[in-house]
Figure (cartoon, rainbow, N blue to C red):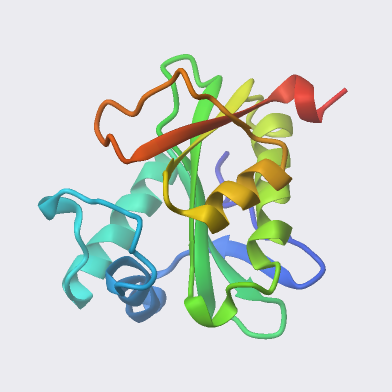
Amino acid sequence: MRTFPEIKTKRLILRKIEDLDADIILFLRSDESVTKYIERAENRKTKNMADASKFIKEINEAFEQHQSISWGISLINNSTIIGTICLWNFSENNKIAEIGYDLNPEFQGMGIMSEALPRVIDFGFKKLKLNRIEAFTHKDNENSKKLLVNNGFIFKEERKDVENDANIIFEIDKEAVIN
């Protein structure tokens, strides 16, 4: 892919994250209510605007190098980002990817992720030709677990996140979505 794939839904635009979004990215990656269930290594934490700009540069370079796709989620009538969603951590053969997301607490409980997630799953399976999408979420993050189950993800009790004991793993296979 050479041009960034914008995705539109009834209420949302999933778009490229730009340096102009640095203040929102700083909030989403540092606010305690947003990051409550996310553990990041010290060198991956976003603590200031310089860190936010660096992160934006990194995710856009990762897109150009076909390593990940990170969308900013905005309402269709307002370009301000209210959350993010990404496909990243691709397998060597590019058939498996991990999905990640966050959302400004002011917009939680409004069905935003329930609208964005299926479109990104569809994009992953149809455009990127993935066979499976995985989601690593904190065992206590009930909202995330419910979102995943409601969108066809299956809890994989036998799988363990070797980097974080608090995480549990969900998967969705292409066959479950595309017939």
